[in-house]
Length: 201
Image 1 (cartoon, rainbow, N blue to C red):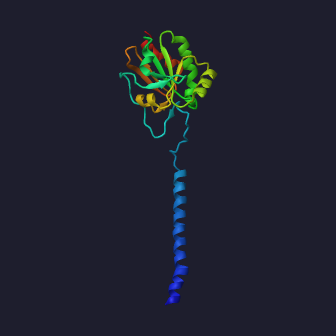
Image 2: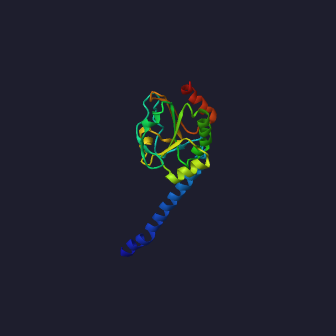
Image 3: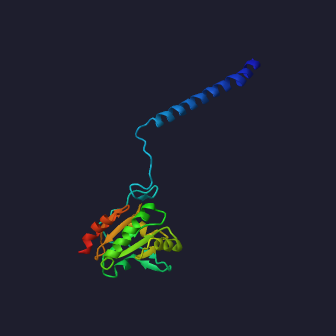
């Protein structure tokens, strides 16, 4: 009896374990085959269709018709600036939220600079950067010849107040302080021109 029990422990149990392992491996191979054969699996391309999405966050909050988000950002000297100060020149405001490692932001920057050169006497252009250091921000804007005002948002106060999840994001604000239009993702020169037509007059 003792010998039989010992035999069961030494022979039967390993056989059972080997059998279970074989079943698990077979199931894994089958699942992989089924997955590989799916015809609806698509390759993810992070830079298309021209926007960077923050992981785990949904789409931007719709601010159209609402007052411009209020928050404090920093100028490049570290001074605090309230977002309402953007309106103090009595002009509509274009606010672009971006950062240097966002490829769509980088591609869009020349179009924004060109629009600033075209409309800068009638529209206040503002860049808000939630990620880069002062040095990196300055280096980037110098590289692209950007001359409109830039501010840092190191605590993401403005980003949170604006409900931004997609970069770049652009707000167009009327002289009454309300958001006239907003855009998620990279904009072309033609799109910027069309967007500004409603506030240029």
